[in-house]
Image (tube, rainbow, N blue to C red; front, side, top):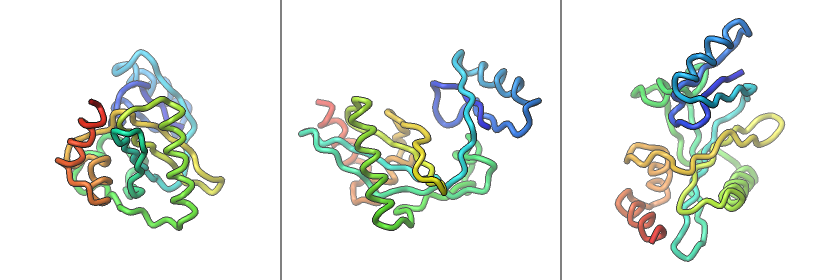
Length: 170
């Protein structure tokens, strides 16, 4: 099971709990970062992220899928920010049916949540199907962050991505 704070990014305050005896300590750590704490069952599967970018006319574009490869117990802060600890594969090695399913799900999430401008939807592909892990309505936007990397792979360089976000916001 995973315990995490509810309103922060980059897996800050997230713990993996494999023994019930460790749950209290994990909750205490999470509460150092947020008063609201989530306890959720672990999901095993391929980690695939989908970026949605809104155009000024409201049209939604979906970037190529990004798959996260790492050797950590789970994709925590250290796995995200230690050089060489994780690899982002863009485009993810998915057949067309999986790509279509994920792109459709990401668009529906964007619309259902009333998002504007951008969204990164993070999924697990499990033996039972697709699981929406989380949504990032304000994903990281450094040049090295996943969202800009996805769009760079789609042929949208970083300055153009920022211009598009600003144009849509106006």
